[in-house]
View 1: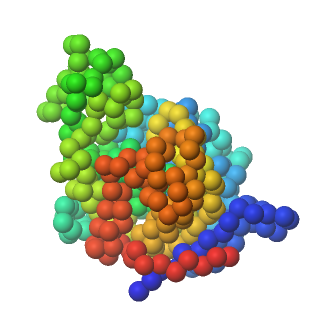
View 2: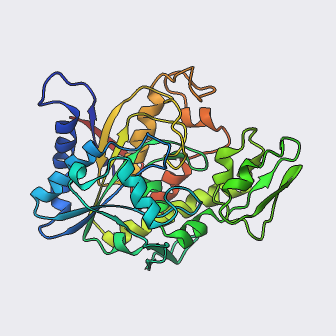
Length: 367
C-alpha cells in the first residue's frame, strides 16, 4: 500500500505562497495536527550543524513548525544528540553554544533547546525491536520520552550512508554515543599506497586509534568506525570494506530509526528540506557547493516513503558539473552514486520497508 508524500516547490509570487506559508501548509496537509495533542511535550528533531557548516535548516523555517505546534496547545522543544567524534557538538555545553551561534535562539525559533542524550551522552533508554541485528536499541531518553515528534531533515549526500535523510536523522541523530557505536560497528582500513602521512585522520579520531609514522596505522581494537577520518583524508586513503560492511551498517541504522517509530507509534511526522543539497553531511565543518538545484519541501508520516520520494526527486534533476558530483549529471541518473559509486544508500529504505518502518511505494501529492 502506497504512502502519501506531500510536496511543495519553491516558486512564490505573493505572501500567500512564500516558503513560510508553504511550510505551514505542509504541516496541515500532511496531517501533523492529528499527531500533536494539547499539552504534549513535542520534540522537534533536527541538526544544528557543525561549526563551520551552513547547510543546516534555517531557524526561520523551524519557527514555522514551532508555531504550528503551539497552535495545538503543545510545548515544543528543539533537540539533537551529541556527536561520537570530537568537534563543536561532542558534549551538551559545546552543542548548545554551536546551536546558538547558528541562530537557534529562543527569540528566533520560539522554542528552547534540549540536548536529548544529556551532558555527556549518558541519558539513555532501551527500546525492544527484535529485528535482524538488534533485539534492543539504545536511544536518547528525552526524544523517547517526548509525547510527539516532528523530524526536520536537510536532505543531502553522506560519506557513509550514501544519502542523509529522515531515516538517518532519527537513527544516528537520535542515538547516544553508545547507540552510535552499535550502528557503525565497522573498522577503518588505510590504503598504504595512497596514504601521504599528513596526520589529518589522527587529529580528528575521537578514540586516538590512529597513529602516523610516515603512514597512518589504525588500532582496530580502539577503532569505533565513526568515519570521521573519511571526511578529512585529502587523498581518500581511509575507508572501510564496502563490499562486506556497508549493507550491515545501513541495516543497523534503519533498525535504530525503527526504534523511534515503535516507541512513538503514530505520533511522528517528517519534513525533508530539499534545498542546498550538498555532497556531505552537516556534521562536516564545511558546506560544499550543492550538487543539484533546489527542489522544495516534502512531508509525510512515513519516513521510508519520504526518503524514497526525496531520493527520486534529486535524481530527476540535472546535476551541477562544477560541483563534487563527478558523473551521473544527466536527469534520471543516480546522483548519490555519482558522488560515491561504492555506496548503495537505498539499503536504508529497503531494510526499513522490510522491518515495517514504512513503504517505498508512495503517492506524491503536489500542493
